[in-house]
Length: 215
Image 1 (cartoon, rainbow, N blue to C red):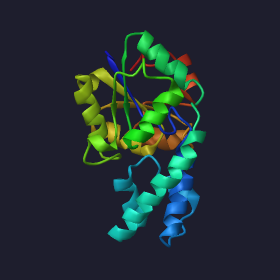
Image 2 (spheres, helix red, strand yellow):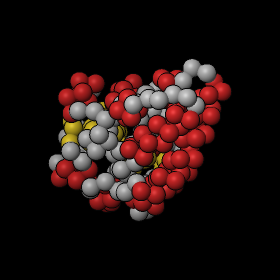
Image 3 (tube, one colour):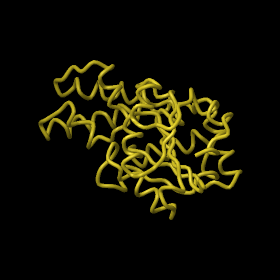
């Protein structure tokens, strides 16, 4: 029986994936790399530790790109709005007695902004960010830490995400995972093939489905 619901944030609850794409595109260009935004989009959902080696091999350039991304994203993230049904889903889960945890590759300050955007402080029991683990998604560390914080076994929790990296990380942690398509980077078929148990258009459709009953 599900006791805890562990949710990704960017692209799942808050419409910030495209801001990350833009921030990374500018950051990579500043260190001399012109990478198509389409290619960057497919990597969003990873933390910087996993994202940067895909494009940057020089450690000094990678650190510089990370700094530029942080600066540019700080300017853009105010335009990240709650996705359809996200606030309602969080309120419904908490109201039904599920323990709700956010587990993200994002930095702590970014998640603080997301909590405000989602009006979710009263609904969230705990948060795990990239600063709490050694490796970000697609490594399973974030979700394993969320299980420790929630004090539940993997079969007592379910994950909600939007990217391939959420699915791979959740499955590696032994967790069931459901996806929404609001992140824009992957098709429903790709997410299902990776191991998602179900895929919905957005959090509103997910809520209407009765989630997390049946998982």
